[in-house]
Image (cartoon, rainbow, N blue to C red; front, side, top):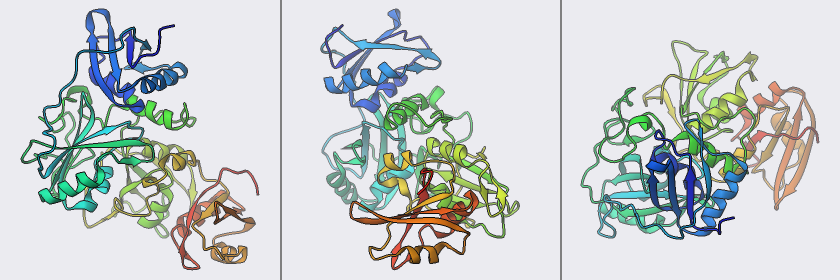
Amino acid sequence: MTEPSKVIHVRNVGHEISENDLLQLFQPFGVITKLVMLRAKNQALIQMQDTPAAVSALQFYGNVQPAIRGRNVYVQFSSHQELTTMYQNAQGRGDEPNRILLVTIHHMLYPITVEVLHQVFFPHGFVEKIVTFQKSAGFQALIQYQSRQSAVAARTALQGRNIYDGCCQLDIQFSNLDELQVNYNNERSRDFTNPNLPSEQKGRSPQPGYGDAGGVYGLQVGFPQMANAAAIAAAFGGGLPPGISGTNDRCTVLVSNLNPDKIDEDKLFNLFSIYGNIVRIKLLRNKPDHALVQMGDGFQSELAVHFLKGAILFGKRLEVNFSKHPNITQGADTHEYMNSNLNRFNRNAAKNYRYCCSPTKMIHLSSLPQEVTEEEIVNHLEEIGTIVNTKLFEMNGKKQALVLFETEEQATEALVCKHATSLGGSIIRISFSQLQGI
C-alpha cells in the first residue's frame, strides 16, 4: 500500500479524457494545485492542496467507481510527494483594485450558476455582467460591477467566505480586464444592463476568450455533469436518491395538465421550490394548462421531474418533463423569483436536498409562532381537506408540527396554498414529511 500523499495517480486515462474532466472529478474534495497528463501512458498525476483532501477523494472513490465519458478510471496515491508543473492564472492581477473581479470556487459540492453568483454579489453594488467558465484552476467567474468601489467592498466582505455551509469557498482577485463582453443571457453568462440578449444558440461555443472549456463543454451548465454527479453524491453521503442520475444539465421544466382555474405562479413556486431554487416561472397564455419553471440548476430540475411526475393537484394529474428551452426569457408575462427570500436552498442546502421526496399525505410545518396551538393549525388548514391527525412539538427550542391529511392530493394542495402564509404573525414554511405516521 502506497503511503498517503497529496498527489493522486490516475490510470486508464483515455485520449478522449481532458484535463477538465480530471479536474472536475477531484474538485469536490478540495483545491487542486497541479496537474500532469501522461498521455503516452494513459495516466495522470493530480496534486491536491494537502494530503487530507487526497485521502478524502480516495476514500470516496473507494466506494464509488469513478468513470469519465463511459470509461472507468482507477485512482491511488502516487509515490511522488510533490509535482513540478504549476498552472499559472493569467487573468488575475492580485490586489490592484478594478471593477471586475475574478472569482474561483474551491471545494465545489453544489453547482454554481449565474443566478447563485448574482445573489451573492449584488448586495455590495450593481452587478453589470457575469461570465462563468472552466479553467485549469477550477470553476471561475468574472463579475463586473458598475463601480470599482463596489468591487472593492465585495472582495473585502466575501474573500474566503463559503457560499454554502462548509463548501463552495470564494477566492477573489481583481481581474486585469477592463470590460466584459457578453453575447448571450443564459445560465453561464448574463448582461444585467441588456436583458434583450438572446440565449445561446445550439452548437455555439460559450463566451470565447475567457475560458478554456470550449468544444464538448460548450452546451453544459456550470461544469461537466460527471463531476456534478460525484459532488452531489458526496453531499448525499455516497449515493443519490433512487432514480436520480445527477447528469442532467437542463434547468427548465415544462408542467402540463394544470388546473388553469386554480393555479398561479406563486402556487407553482411553493410546489417546485421543495426541490431547488426557482429563477422564474411563466404560465403559457396560449396553453393555459401549461407552465415553464426555471430551476437553479440541472440537478434541482431533475429532482422536480422525478418526484412530481404524476402528482395530483387541484384534481389534475401533473405531467412534468424537461423543456426544450434552456431558460425562460424575462418579460411582462414572467414572474421573477431569483432574489426571493422564500427560495429554500440558499441556506441549509444539504438538509433540503435530503428532505426531497414525492408528495405524501403528511406535511411538516416550521417557523411557527411559539404560542401556537394545534387548534389554530387545524383552523388554518382544514378548508383544504380532511385532517386525520396532528402533532405539535418542539425542536431546538422552536415549535414545529406534523399534519396528516386523508389523501396525498389534499396534502399537496395544503402545501401549495398555505406555504409562506401568515399564522399568528409568522410566515410559516411547509414541506412534505416522509414519516409514515404520527
